[in-house]
Length: 44
Image (cartoon, rainbow, N blue to C red; front, side):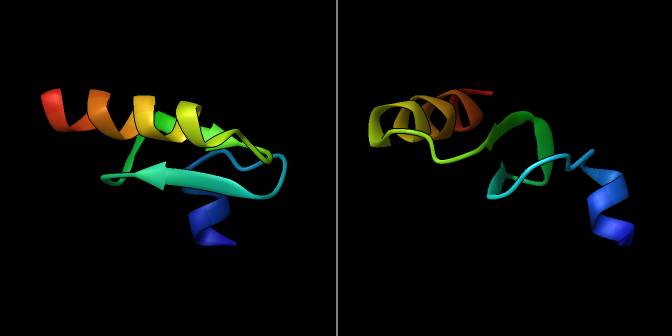
């Protein structure tokens, strides 16, 4: 429950990258969207 509150989880699945909600995805996202978020997280 603590992590759900920390990352504002309203639906599942929710993928949080680098412990930052800025780069998270909610729902069953296509692979290209996940790769875009991972790339953005790496680049800062």
